[in-house]
Each structure stands twice: as C-alpha cells, then as structure tokens.
Amino acid sequence: MADFLLYALLAGLALAVVAGPLGSFVVWRRMAYFGDTLSHAALLGVALGFLLDISPAIAVTVGCLLLAILLVTLQQRQPLASDTLLGILAPSTLSLGLVVLSFMREVRIDLMGYLFGDLLAISPTDLAWILGGSAGVLVFICALWRPLLAITVHEELATVEGLPVATLRMTLMLLIAVVIAVAMKIVGVLLITSLLIIPAAAAQRHARSPEQMAFGASVIGILAVCGGLALSWYKDTPAGPSIVVCAAGLFLLSFLLPKR
Amino acid sequence: MSDALIRLKDVNVTRAGQSVLENIQLNVTSGEIVTLIGPNGAGKTTLVRAVLGLLRPDSGDVWRKPKLRVGYMPQKLQVDPTLPLSVLRFLRLVPGVNRNTALAALGEVGAGKVIDSPLQGISGGEMQRVLLARALLRKPELLVLDEPVQGVDVAGQAELYALITQLRNRYQCGVLMVSHDLHLVMSTTDQVVCLNRHVCCSGHPEQVGNDPAFVELFGRNAPSLAIYHHHHDHAHDLHGAVCQPAAPAHDQPHTHNHDHGDSCKHG
Image 1 (cartoon, chains in turn yellow, green):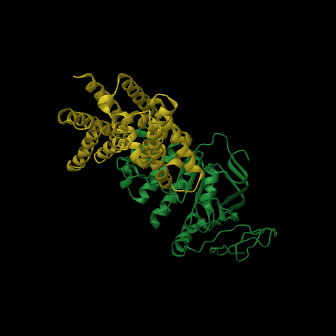
Image 2: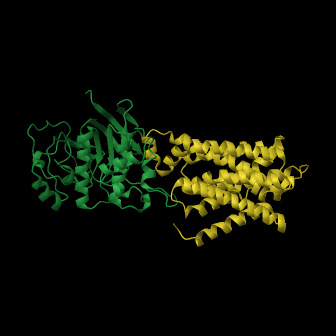
Image 3: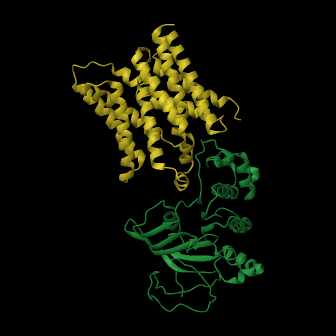
C-alpha cells in the first residue's frame, strides 16, 4: 500500500474512533452549532499561524481552544441566545480568516485543502499530531465518562451531587476544540461537524445504552473512513467529501435496519 | 440545635431588580418534614435553589451542615430523546451503585418493575419514583423535593406523600419539600412554611391529621381549603406587603380557613 494511503487511513481511523463518543455528546447536548463555529474559526487559526509564522497545527489548536473559552464566557455574560451568538461568530471568524489570508500575498496556500480537507497529503508529522491528539482526547473522555454523562442528564442534579459542573462543561468543549483542530487536515473546516454528528446520529436508533451509541458511532465512523478512502482511491474523488458521503449513506442505511 | 441540617437567616434574593425572596428564615432539622407552600411565583423554587447552593442569595446566610449529603429530586427531568438511557443506567450515574442496590432503592419506592425501561418511556408517576430512588441512593441526610407529586393523579399523590413519610421514618433524614396542595401533606408534615416572597407564616399542621377520615373528607373534596394552626405575627395589605408588623403572637392555636390568592391575603 502506498505510504500516503496508509497515513490517510491511520489518521482517518484515529479520528473516527474518538469522534464516536465525542460526537454522541454533541448530539445529546445539542452542540452541533457550537462545533460548526469552532471549525469555521479554525481557518482563522490557520491564517494567524501564517501571520505569526508558527505551525498551523499549533495555531489551529490554540485558536480553537481560545475560541471555546471565549464562547463559554460570552454565553454567561450577555443576554443573546447561544445560537445567535454562534451565528455571529461562525461566519465572522471564517470571513476574518479569509480576509487575513488575502493580505498575505506571499503566502500561497491551498484554500480548498483547508476548507474540505486534504487527507491524502498528510505528512508523518501531521499523522503524529493527529494520533497524539485523538489518543489524548480519548483518554479524557473515558476517564470523565460518567460525570460527563451525569451533567448531560441534569446539570443541577449533578451540581447538588457534588460534581464540578462548570469545569466538566468547559472540559467537554475543550475536547471538542482539540478534535476539531485535529480533524481539519482530514475533512476540512466545512465538514468537520458532520464527522462528529452523522455517525452518532446513525448509531442512535439502534443503541440501548449511551456506551452502545458511542461505540456504534465509532464503528460507523470507521466504516465511513474506509469506504470514503476506497471511493477516493478507485474513483479519484476528493477524500474528505467522500468520507462524509459514506457516513451520510450509512446514516440513511440505519433507517432500513429494523429498530431494536 | 445540634441536629440542624440547614439554617437560613435573613436571606434576600433579587432577580432583574425585583425582589424574589425577602428576609427568609428557615430551619430544617433531621427527622423533620418541612413543607413549603405558596402561590405561583412566591419564590418556592428559588428558595429551594438557595438551600441547595444552586444560587447565591444577594444577602443573608445559608448555613449547611458541613459535608451534608443531599438527595435532590428536581421538579422535572427531561432527558434528550436521543440519549438512550435505561432507568438502571440513570441510577448508576450515582457512584458505587450496582444493579442490586438500584433494584433495592427502586423497590423501596415501589418502582422495581421499570428498572430496565428506557427513561423516556416511563410515566410521570414512575419518573417521580425513580427520581426519589436516585435521591435515596445517595443515603441522604436531607431530602429536597421540588413538587414531588407533579403530574401524578390524586390517589398516587397521597401514596407518594405516605412514601416520603415512611422514608423519613426509616432513615431519619430531614425533608424539605415544595407542594401546592396542603390538604394532602398536612397529615404528613411537621412544619408548614407559607411563602409569598417572604415567610407569611409557619407552624405545625393541626393534629386533625390524627383522624384519617378528616383528611379524606376535606382533603379530597376541597383543594383550596386547608386547616392548620400557626402563628401570625403580621397582616397583609392588598399587595401582600406586611402592614402590621410584630403583633403579639397567638398563644392559642386557632383553626382558620386558608385561601391563598395571588397576593396572599389573610389575617
């Protein structure tokens, strides 16, 4: 197998595994729009990375983390509804990223690669970043699984029972930020949330426990990555969108299977 | 008092410039059932949230016994329909709970049969019992119940209140609950606190509760009629403000019809 294909496969699988449980939380807590906003802002991170001459991977990760913190703070401090706030921030950060990039005429970047992913072009360094990031997030998710589930079910009950709800909520958002930063290279800023949400939504109909749904979402994500890469390899389609198309196909398929 | 669980002193809460709670004094000791009653918007839930530490009062003291274990039953629990959660899994969100302890707690509240049902598929009455079971699993010293009988039919309500009393007797925990219907709780409660932004009055429900037939007769048929004795130390004008402070407290318990309107007029 060609090296680049192996790298692509490993990166995609790592992301699919961690996107399962994390995506389930995004679905349960209705945070899809939050993920979208973070991913749009990732492009701003890329632009700032070029501007300050730091590695885009670091710039995007730090940018996503900062924006997540900013969002949480803004949500608590002002009266606008969350979706309004996110609806302002998502396009603004994306546009700001594009504008900043256009000022740097000496920098020639493949914009399409950032918007829709460039899975087949990842380097060993990218791969190490993706594997490390995914593994780290997975460890956190497993360690905090029960408290995170408890605050998802009822935040006040969790508070009374002594859980540090605000910290847990912030941790979940930061984990999502890391995954988005990691996933940008794979499916691009415009498609990242789909990889979080679609497998989780597909697994939901057939799961009888939160763990089953998270695990099922990982499996469906893995299938989508394999299918998308195969499609891309044999039919020369763009890899990121092919993965998303496969995930969407699996989601539709989940309706055909009898509900348990 | 050595067995005090919570003590609220001069608690004031303001929301958006409106006073929600004024000078609240409230004590709950172990083994005691305290019931908060009052019209909509009287601040019952706000007071409960202050007791639980979910909101910080603008002034006044909220004292909780150090390391107090609280079992809280929220007014309602809505779990996102996409979250596949069985009753057992829900109860196991409390650390250290296994199937046996969960089944024991559910059995205690008479809901053992729903243990494997999805949380979103059980009835309102079953949900209240499941929430109570979850509160019990924490081995609480204080049970806080926000409208524990909400969405339960009248026969079920009486049953639930009887159950709460039973649990209090067995565990000797303090109980603070919010209720709309004094007629059902009067035979089971030790102290009634009538709230309308401030504590209008508080006291023991009269011992007519000794005669279950009385509860049956008046309770079931006249929801707005409740009889208990308590001490008045003030009167109200039309807006519910205190207009006659510090009149001498009655020495003799007296019976009176208690009809709560929007502005809590009585005297």
